[in-house]
Image (cartoon, rainbow, N blue to C red):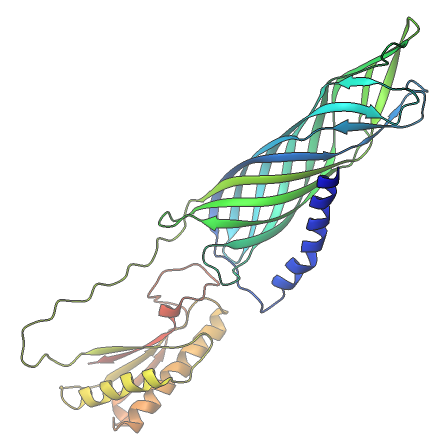
Length: 371
């Protein structure tokens, strides 16, 4: 029981930490987009539920069902929105053995198994905290769970009492989820997962059986109260349309030429949500300006772009600001202003294809093209 309490305490202590992590502006979402499937299994640690027997079958108005550790498993299919939020339908199964029935007026020896299965609808949020090898997530779910006693048998050693319960009943359930995924290198879409789940099955189920006292057998029932379950789950998840890693362009082999022709286009990259020029950016613009004086140029196109992390309206404005910053630097480096044509394309014509809400450095750029 001390171990189960430690698991529960860890979950509650982690809750405020998770709340800080998902504060606006603190993180950006892992871009999980489209259909995915997942499976997992692990340790099942039920918190002993209370039972109310009919009459005074156990000599007291309420008893406690003491369960041992067991195992859990689950299968899920879901859909990611590309902004960190995803939704899934999960089927689960949990099993544990009965160790004894506690709180009775007299000692009992008990046996049996408790099997629980059901369907849950979960809403989750994946986070990018700056570590490409790990993405924490939090979530909550609701659904319906069936519990089967298979069977629950209690006997008073050396005494006149015995009781047997069996049957299957269902109740609504809720759960909280706290975990992390770990992408598998070089396998786009494949991740390992580990999470803690706390499930509350609301209770109210009744299980019929018989009770024998001093040779007299009569029907009786047990009413199950809330079942609190703690589960550690380790699994695997696959997203079907994860983008492949961006290919690193190979450097061309140097040509044996005494004077290579000047470049006809130049790329200048920007920091996230910025339109000002770094020292490196200014040196590239200077190189482009000097080159324009050595080649035949009728006009110079300055095209600005943004990544997908902002709204389309904001990205369009940002791409124009970046293009104007480059054009101004070209003029300062001696290029005639009337030879420059400025355009902004926002988050279209991506250099690296991504989903929405992704901060991709290669998409934050300005292209200088000689015509």
